[in-house]
Image 1: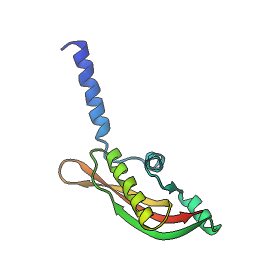
Image 2: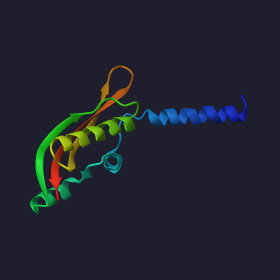
Image 3: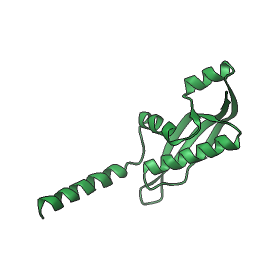
Image 4: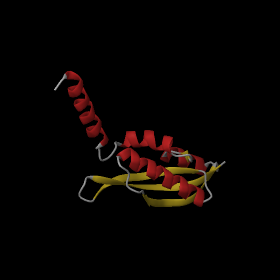
Length: 124
């Protein structure tokens, strides 16, 4: 095997390994999810403050959304973001706040599925 072929095999192996992660850390999740949604994201502290100041109205508290399975955790998150945006619109809102999230293992092929617990809000 020449050096080019060896480099391609190593690069492919690293890419495959990186894409096989089955979850994200909380900081990775909180950094990436708001970028994937079109609705306004509020962290828990900001949402509580905005609600108490009358800047936001809580529409639905404690919604649970099980997103469709993606090919990777990033696919899981993209599907979760789409679901959050759909629920925010269905609730006549424009913002959300994450209460919790979890990845569960599904099936026998190391597939994962994201479950997101969130509140929907309407903010001025």
